[in-house]
Length: 179
Ligand code: FES
Image (cartoon, rainbow, N blue to C red; front, side, top):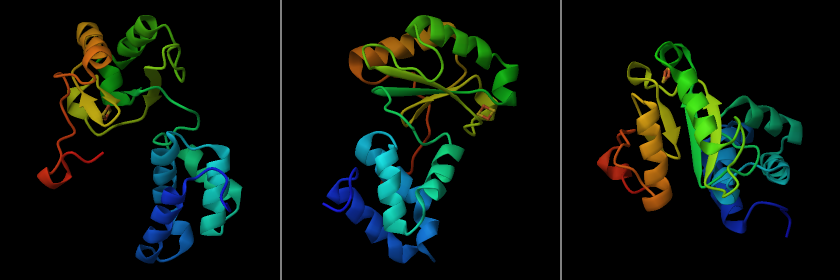
């Protein structure tokens, strides 16, 4: 097979997007998203595949992938915990939530728990500035966090795969059920 990391389906999805964009390079962000959905993270071989499909150099793809926190550059746990550290959240205690998560999970920022359940990241504004401190876990928001809420959320996710403390983001009915 021509491509080393991406599945045939992922390559087909990227190629199907091509007509929607003015040139191949404009497809870099969607291609990285598709690669992440395919592999769980954006590996170096995946970036080389994307470069080949989009007729770019691997470093051009790497530059884009490493600029955005949305792309995971290494494998992550079942639940990717991303805590906002930007000003509005920082002013209402984001740092203490991060500290609590580190202690509770026994990992540092950028690390994954031994059981593979949780990866902890600290990111810039997630557009929920009025309800900090907040975090995003996979595609759900959890807002106005306290250490107690964090404990409840982590245990809900581990035991039931979801938590009633999720507060958003709120999706259009047409998008509900989609990833
Ligand atoms: S500052 Fe935290 S969501 Fe915007």
